Length: 183
Image (tube, rainbow, N blue to C red; front, side, top):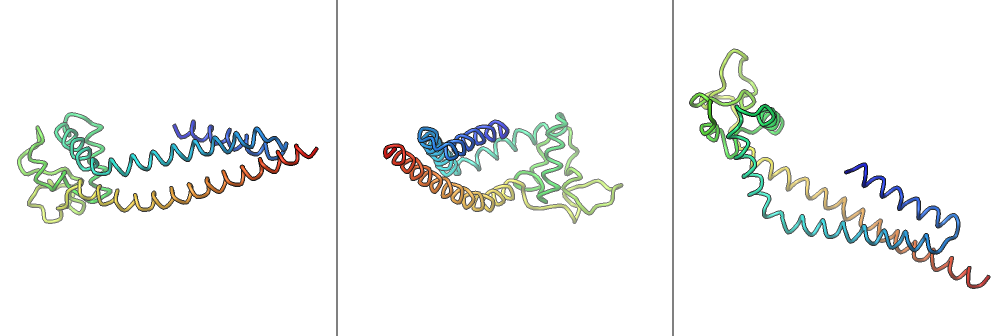
């Protein structure tokens, strides 16, 4: 998808450059219109993300609940949980107690990724003193809230640059048209 979007942006940019070099009003104005369309699509994506942010908790909780139940039966889920718990330093969905519902898991046993400093020969359990106590759901939501501020700032900067590009393309198109009319 990123390659396709990059290719489309390349074509639009190429259209604008060729229009400016060749002093072609139609190409420059087409560039401006396509830039406006991209701006509107970005704006609608941002509005959708803002409106759906309230659903994030439910979506995350539902998918985490689904994957934790099949932890021992699905290697991808197991790897995903282990990587997530290790990287963001969490255990379970809301806490270590969530691992009690997992099938084929001995009582009070936790995945090794919940106990970062335990000895390799030991089993990670709820009574292990070094296990993570915070759930992954709250950590993921916290990370998302932090990163969304940065993403919003970057999106605002990109939109500003696009608006400036549209204004400059329209000015160039008008200047080209005025030169054409005087000739």
